[in-house]
Length: 387
Ligand SMILES: Cc1ncc(COP(=O)(O)O)c(C=O)c1O
Image 1 (cartoon, rainbow, N blue to C red):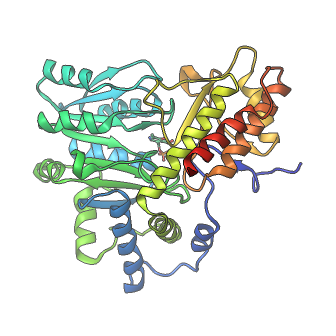
Image 2 (spheres, helix red, strand yellow; image 1 turned 90 degrees about the vertical axis):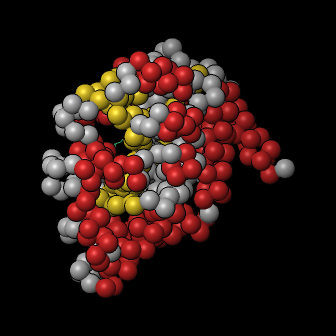
């Protein structure tokens, strides 16, 4: 077998391919974390993370995957009985309901069909109907359906209505525009293994002043490890996390963030957007349908419906045999879609390769499509962008 776990191309929504510079950084000798040297590295990581998150608010880096940072948001902010409007259009947004229930809050679920976006009007209506809703929780980029929600417009509403807006930006931060301070996001979450281009294991949380007001009034925060005031106190005292830092991951994140800033925020977002556009054009030309509602397609992941007769297991197995790992659907979309992520260092080479391999595998499985048509459409998109 030519392709194995070490040389397969990960087109999955995290983990994603990492630049060798990040692997090298993670293999550095581990130094002690309660030292001026490490504090400097950690402090730089937090400053760079703020730049990538486009915020002046507090940002904390937590050991734990993105879900740990999501849990920190709810555990610290939501008191028993508090109403949280949970906007659902996929598997990850459902997590806000489960977390709210875990900490005794009252989720007010507002669900739209998976594949569709959450429109600002329905948020407005829901808030008018139940004025005692205190929080609104949303997934900015729904990875399970490859839909991006119109966060800026939703944030305008929540700001006007004085609600606390909690945003899962796990697959948008570092790959698409997210301006929490300008838009009025109170809590923003990110994860290391997605567009930020590091290994899994770190969650980031931005906490704005309105969220702090709520947290600071609480007498009891029902979490020890994820207690945000403890993170704030420790960072303000000595630029370090309260508990032993995930040193090797922080070395990796430091390098990954450096690379993001070298590329530049705007350039990086534009590249992610171009890759998404090229992949979508290629997929559609091959005769496949995108799952996402038109106008709300994600720029960091694409989901395509299988045509009749193409089996999910057979397709993904064949793709893997040819050296590319793509993701399947989740929950009721299992077997119906496949998902291709284009995060971090994914660029023209990988997009063209995925399209070429997709048409080869579809043909192997008996689906009729024109060889090379997907590649040609993506090339056209790239060439137009040069003009
Ligand atoms: C949008 C979104 N939210 C939350 C998560 C969960 O993050 P983690 O697996 O890092 O805990 C994921 C992971 O795929 C995600 O894509």
